[in-house]
Image 1 (tube, rainbow, N blue to C red):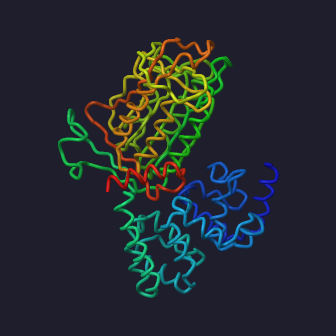
Image 2 (cartoon, rainbow, N blue to C red):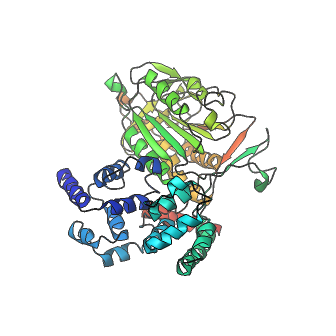
Image 3 (cartoon, rainbow, N blue to C red):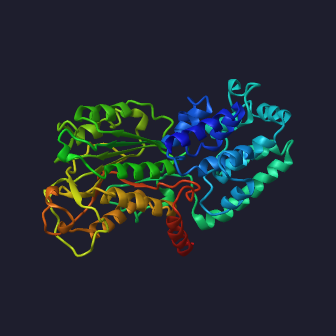
Length: 495
């Protein structure tokens, strides 16, 4: 089956021209960041990246169908993928099915409708805003639009400069933007769309919900795409096979899905020894984050108090990892939010039991990690799977309770403009209610047969309480239908 699938992608790639590849890349910018696209010079490489991002796979080529429809390659759509223009038009009318945002469709349509003379006029009028070497004669309108985005001249919610340019010689396209803005304004009131990640700083002792009004708080706009790195350190196979962390692959998949949706450049590193864990974290701290707004790191492994266990059974101190991102060690992230989430227990004690059933049907295993002392630095938040000296659990079939619940809550609450601390509070409540019944695990899991609950924890510097909103535009894109329905119900109640 895989061979047939790759033969299909090969045949399609052979039929695509250079300008069509450029169009596909432009239409995919919400899913494949510019940095990742720069190395793509042929369709086959583009399809490989889409597979890495899980945007196309065996049995699901809906995104590829949409892309071919958008660039008007109906011959390939029909001949290779068995679809048609009419079928795609019907399909893309269903809420949430379109993966290419309305904003991206608008820009692509404008680029397609401009004549070569029009493009020259646009370049001429942009001379004072964009460097001349970016406006060379061979630069296509798609490249010009990408430069406008890179320089902050146009954004999803701010197309004034593009309108001012087009009104001089293409009033019809200016009108098209007006219509888009009107529709977006209507949708905003219902869908709470935003293109921000706000970090609000509160004085020591002041609650996130009280005190200074939100509009008066210092905040950071999230203006870059990607917003930053989301690094996942995921240990599955250990030196001792009995310690393998079954189910953690599902956690990695869930995290990649959510943070790619939130427009982070998401990278997963599997099965790292202790020394490699530290080297990997340090490597990211040495990168230039000047054009990024945030850093997120997930650590999924075994451990013990204050330490994370590598696959070689050696340990690395959590404090050492966090210190890599202090202001002096990582100046390009100074004043920007740095979020660390650690999936593991923090000891060997089970929580007292409650009487709510966990919905995981597979048996359970334990991880172990404690809550560390956090270095004295600002803008850091650490989310832990459980409180110090206690166990946490992972279902070998569906992944850890903490990570899966966190991902679910982010998909549901980010679009409602709930900040990350509020989301973590909801995660704590949800996970704390779940009972991991000892009878669900067999003896080899080394779980006390008494019932136990699973209580997560989060911490941040006491002198700098952090409030972070993780929201992206067009959040419907890529969400399962069930989650869309839940969101629609919540949004209808909040409007």
